[in-house]
Image (tube, rainbow, N blue to C red; front, side):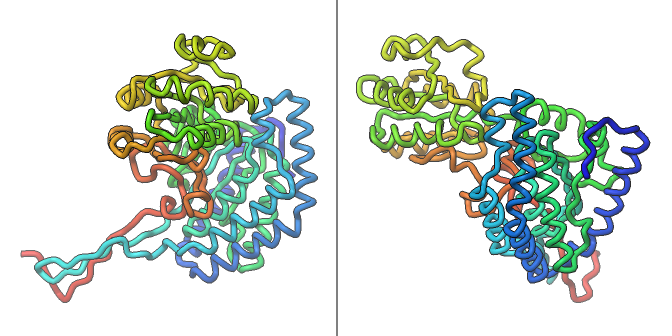
Length: 428
């Protein structure tokens, strides 16, 4: 049973040291496990989740009741909620990961030197990964499965709000590991909600953890980025933009904008700012804003937006830097592609941006001049997702520029080494 109370520091140290020992012991066998063994393990995990669906939902009902009592926001509650479809999607996601090519041992590049040496750059597991996440219990399944596929051991630390759901899902992953003969220490969950456990993970557990991946709100990610003594794959927030160019098809622009904002408002790929080409004011502005309003979205606009669409409220300076994760969008008129690039360059969190346009020159400038991790043309920002990219699933979206960027899937959870084959060469 997970502990939800504050724990003595020495008890936390002992607990985390045990997890570290288990992870180190599991990392070796995982690194050399065959693709067939890993895939059999993933299939066993998926079957265990399906067989335990009711148990998972009962655990989630406890978390939902606690969240409601605690006054969690609707967006937060949506991220926390599980239903039969979402549980089935977790099992499907694990099977999708199993269907991916095993990245471990993949030769990324190879070449011959004039002296006859043959050099290969080969994918290898990272080792032990720490994943710290909030609210979304499905991250337990996604992270565990992705790390396993890439040959890594993982230590999971879910949020206190999803503690019961995450524990129930983790039990299914452990069942799958045992069924396939892999060590249970391959996927572990921190069995306490004490915040000191997070601090221990950020310290690296005496060199055990090779990388930390946070998935959650700004407060969590800032703490991880500030305090971690090991490398971090993370994004601080998803301040995503949709730019509607004057060349865009109106029907397409309406459909994409409404989907980008309203399909699921609580995910990091939800659009937060709408930019409309000033040249499209007479044709596109009111229909797009009216469609958003009709779908239940609050619009906060600049002076030009409010003049054309009086139902919009005034946008403050803070609105252009706010990740709402709610049924709110900020809107502004811009002077074509130049204005869009300028605004996004100033305010973006470098997560995901979309352009809706038929003008290829505008699209090329958008793609070439904006430096976000994901750029889309004539498609919703809600496609900023590893599963939608064909990666099976993702642990998160990385917006840094070192190692991993964009959806963090199995390939991003590997490093590489060089294999150099000779025939007796010595260096003069």
